[in-house]
Image 1 (cartoon, rainbow, N blue to C red):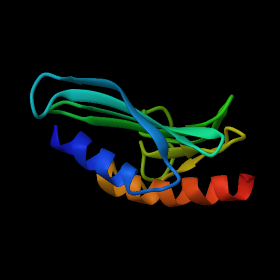
Image 2 (image 1 turned 90 degrees about the vertical axis):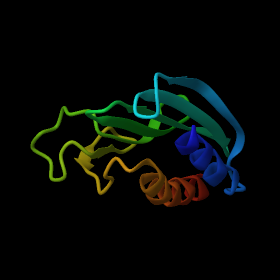
Image 3 (image 1 turned 90 degrees about the horizontal axis):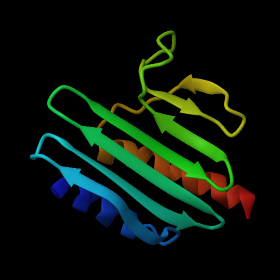
Length: 123
């Protein structure tokens, strides 16, 4: 699948990401699929899950260790936020609007900078 291959290539280009694994990869056709990828980064993990069908795209990006540290997703449970359903959870579970759009590769480029900044501050 081209989208998964493109994501993996971008992840492999980030030297801080190690042990990149595809944990889930199922597809019905080019428009209906789900995949989950995980990579180690410092003492944390970055997990990306993307689900698509003809009518919607659902994503989550999560940095975690023994608990969630940073998470972006578009599960539609905060309708009052700007840019609904896209939102962000910080390490204290505060919820805020997100600038992500559901375009997986563009969104990855946005979050990886935040993830790298976060783990650099934790070293």
